[in-house]
Amino acid sequence: MNAPVDEQAISPDINDLLIEIRDLKTQITGAADRLGKLEKQLRIKLKGEDV
Image (cartoon, rainbow, N blue to C red; front, top):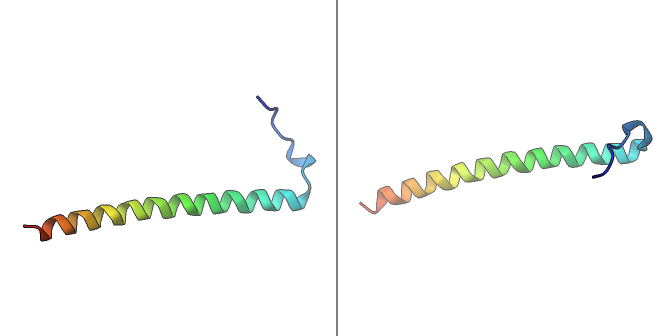
């Protein structure tokens, strides 16, 4: 296991990139959740049309 990285030892440029990556991962997770909900709604609507 790697030792925790000391954030003060990271250059500001790298720290900014890490922050941007974390933000993007959060956005991706939210979008994936939203996509899953929309797909579920679509399946329900399509099932309703089969009746």
